[in-house]
Image 1 (cartoon, rainbow, N blue to C red):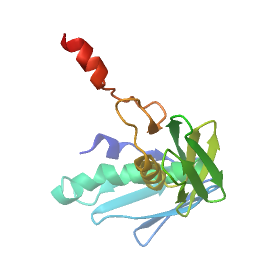
Image 2 (cartoon, one colour):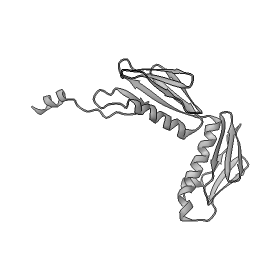
Image 3 (cartoon, helix red, strand yellow):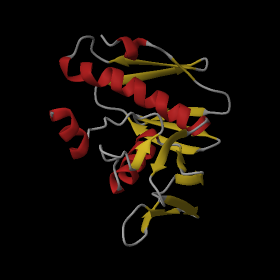
Length: 183
């Protein structure tokens, strides 16, 4: 049995969680999110807490979905109450980003600017070469950050590109450094 699945979820203040027809609906200040329950998983909501369990104990089909369902429901509750954010950093001479409305314009060393349209429920903020991506859906925020990073991933020689804040880039020695070390 999953250790994560056994943990109970505490419903935060201002969030309403309802279970109807095997669909969990969470409503909060950041919006409404839905999660359809997988077969064989049941949820018990009472006294501001949610418990996730399997309908049949030690069922191999639902064993893998047990912890996943608990984590997903906890992420929905966090998303509608406080939301999620990912931060990206631009490194390079002349690399800039500008957020306008629901789009992001990047100047990252190409001959043209790259325009990135935000999916529904995601917003951007830019300050001093740091792009912050906000949203209620953790998966959508993470995927959007990964797509923006994929536009110009950091290269290993100079480290130029778009990287996550706090990400370590493994640097390689260039040809000149290798030639000096070979003697």
